[in-house]
Picture 1 (cartoon, rainbow over the protein chains, first blue to last red):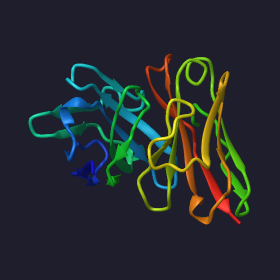
Picture 2 (cartoon, each protein chain N blue to C red; picture 1 turned 90 degrees about the vertical axis):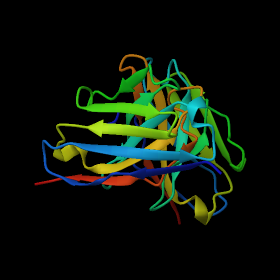
Picture 3 (spheres, each protein chain N blue to C red; picture 1 turned 60 degrees about the vertical axis):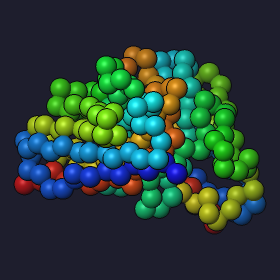
Picture 4 (cartoon, chains in turn yellow, brown; picture 1 turned 180 degrees about the horizontal axis):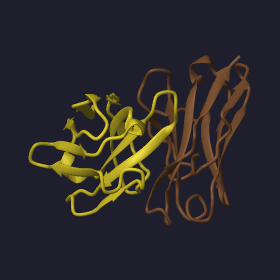
Amino acid sequence: EVQLVESGGGLVQPGGSLRLSCAASKFTFSSYSMNWVRQAPGKGLEWVSYISVSGRTTHYADSVKGRFTISRDNAKNSLYLQMNSLRDEDTAVYYCARGGGSFAYCDYWGQGTLLTVSS
Amino acid sequence: QSVLTQPPSASGTPGQRVTISCSGSSSNIGSNYVYWYQQLPGTAPKLLIYKNDQRPSGVPDRFSGSKSGTSASLAISGLRSEDEANYHCAAWDDSLSGVVFGGGTKLTVL
């Protein structure tokens, strides 16, 4: 079955940077768009970013635009999220999710990785 | 404040039918597909309904989705204790050029 495993979360000070990774397996990674979705403690889901199959098309939530960068390495079956200028409100569990024909379609999700931004 | 509006909570007894609403606008639900995700306690979300009313394989037909204008609904019939979860709606928003979610609805099976 499709597997998505996030890593790279942890405790970071405000203003700091971190890169999240998502290792994909048991499907043809290079054939699917991908998303990052986050969930702050006790809150609902918030879409963060989308990347197309080739990586040439990306979209970002306004809340992270200019600070976060999504990328992928199809040769390594990996998805990344580079996060800079981190803020307290970025504290959340970050999920990578496999996309499909429509932007809001996420058919498989990883277990998530927790990012805590705090001094 | 979420772009899509859901009731924060819903409840029902086993065997009942419950519906969860999701209200949006012309730039999201009014012009794009709606998706529903189920999130059991302590777990990652799971795709429940896609393209307004389609069920992925493995999702029981007790779950159904519908859309009318700028609103959508998720209906669960024959409610079971294992349906107790948070339910989230989502859609693409043309104005924001991004995906928007509802705030989530916590379903309690009494």
